[in-house]
Image (cartoon, rainbow, N blue to C red; front, side, top):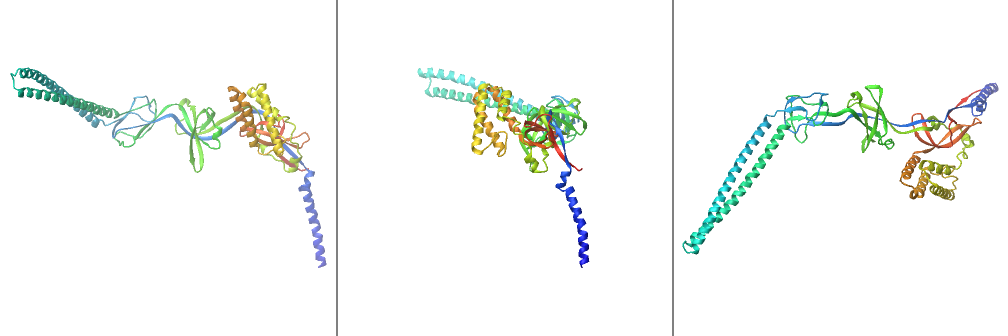
Length: 494
């Protein structure tokens, strides 16, 4: 038994020694024997473009569906797919026999109504002549009755005949008006029949290209509540539009007149250019995904783009020329230990008086005069004093320890500046201030690590602007052009 224990102890000593050696070599203590190599990329100046990627179908600028307002049989089709047509060109004809018969009937009805009018007018002339004779007889009988040469009954009979003649004239006038109304009805019926006869000839309403034909000669068309579609005509295919669907998260960055580039599968090696002409407010929801339609217009030289093609679109929502930029990887880098973060210098003094720097930028970008500069400085000083008193803040712009909600701080700052400068700005300055304010709202704080002169990482607080697939804009903060920004760290063993 004693021998077995001695053997186990003898075996455990080398194992323990090997474990300690491994811990020393590969554990945290062993790292002191190695070194950390930092990979960096310099902060540089160049172009940054913010891209919104989407897709959508190619459409003609104007597409008209041509149908038939009449029911009947197609007699002839004059055009085919890809036919070029002009306004008034005949596309197809319906069998016109029924409609031609209706026109002939309407013409006959009109002729009969005109004859009836002539008859009624003659009857009215006759009634007028009878009235005139009756009035003459009344005058004569009145004189004879005064001289007692004619009985009173004869005079009264003459009066009655005159009144009857007047009534006959009123009847004749009414019949004439009725005959005239009948003629108007017959003319309207003839016009309707003529219009229907003309509609048997289906003509093009616009100048364009036939992109769809759904009928053949002999086919019966049934027009009920909705006109059947016979042809589709695309107007002016030398220009096209794309109905791109943009996600709700990206639509806020898209605006009218934004440049766009797109490709189609038919020409994968060719890039087309267009421009945003409309951002439609109507939303489309599909499977809980909300998108908005953005219309992009582009030239179609050589008519290489066909309606219905799918375009893969990149919308350039913002561009910065000569912007200070850093690689996107630098924003994802963090030191392995919090000790490095705690001991690394934060560059608090590098920015100097950040409030003063902001006023100087306002002065340059907006063109503030001395009174406006003084008002801006006073507003920022008061806000800084309030924040120091209320929350012990060291800087309302820099965001030191205990900086609080940066979004709320930024809103308070913008509100104070707007209150102070609003009454003092002219129209041009007000537009420039609004543009500057929107630009400030678009930036957000971030932290990057710079390789210092001592070889240790230094923490820098920056404000980032727009970004693309490679770079992010540095809109402000403690970073200068040419500084080596860390992207990743590698452990190198001795």
